Image 1 (cartoon, rainbow, N blue to C red):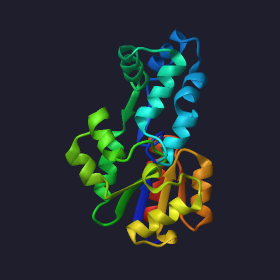
Image 2 (image 1 turned 60 degrees about the horizontal axis):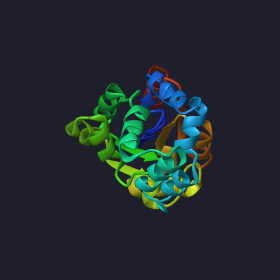
Image 3 (image 1 turned 90 degrees about the vertical axis):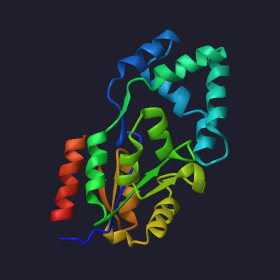
Length: 208
C-alpha cells in the first residue's frame, strides 16, 4: 500500500461540474451556437488563454465575449448567470476531502482565470466557507503561478508548496492528459469520470 501524504484535485469537471447542461445549451441557441460553440467562445478565446496564465483578467475575458456577441452590460450579466446556471459544486466530494484531513494534505490544482478559485466557489457557487476551509489546505491556480496543466512545472509547484514527494501524492483530474502528465512525474493519478468512480479509485489507492 503506498504511503499517501497529499491528494490534489482539479476544480472544473471534478469539483465543479455542469450537472444541468440545458441552461447553457438554451443560452447557446439564443446566440446561434451549440454547446461546443459556446464553450469555445468562453473557454477557448485568446482572452481566456491569457487569463489562465495571469496575463489577462476575468473581466477582460468577459469583455471579449461581450464584444463578440454585441451585448449590453445588462445582457452580459444575464449571459454570465445563465452560462453558470447549470453548474454545481459537489459538496459531498468536499466533505470527503475534509474527512481526509489532517491525516493528509488536500489541495486544488486548477487551470483558472481566478486568482482566488476557492473564494470564487464560496462567493459565486455558495459553498459554505467553513466547509471550503476545512476541505482545502492549499490552492494552486495557473493564473497565479503563470503556467498551466499539463506543463510539468505546475505539478512541481504543487509538490513544493505542499512539501511532499510525487510518489506520495495523488492527482485527480477529468482530462486524461493532465493525469498522465502527473503520472510521468511520479504521482499516482486518478482520471475522474464520475464522483462515485473517483472515490472508489481513491479508496483503492489509500487503502491498498
